[in-house]
Length: 220
Image 1 (cartoon, rainbow, N blue to C red):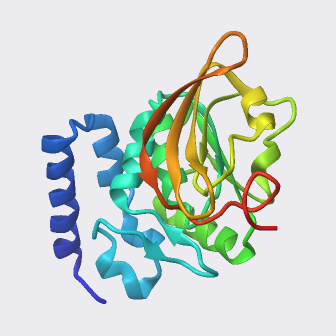
Image 2 (cartoon, rainbow, N blue to C red; image 1 turned 30 degrees about the vertical axis):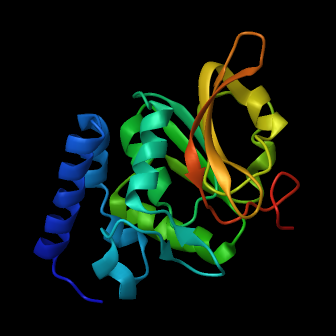
């Protein structure tokens, strides 16, 4: 489906207007959505659907989440300039790009993906977006980076629980978010790390994500 730039922008602005009036989405997050062009992160034949509020297929059963889901997760993470962020499930790179934009040049996003074709697709898309604070690694990211500390952690694939290794690498007061449940349906769960290492949990509603690989997910 082909659509010119003006028509895409109109669809983008309709989504922004909806979020402002119905969800009170902060202007910083809206600015990220406006500046990171979603049409660059979907297959070319689906570019005209980039601002339809629905997930779109990528490859090998993976999808790019619908715009509202991306922005709900982004808002829940409360990204600040300078944040050090870790993501499991790069996909096309779109969520990482939104987060990288918000973290700014003093922050960074480390994101992992197990599907080689998506790793290359995401790297190309991130280059198009002109972002230089995003680092993509081809691996199962459920163990995080031993010895590292992160301000924010995001899972963009369904998991049975938050990986214990990631919780250990989350700073006190840091936020982790992801779809937690079984392979068929999950709850979007946000955890804020307490001083004793436990998480204070918020449940943001039911979702269905593609499964995460590895021992915390549903696919080997």
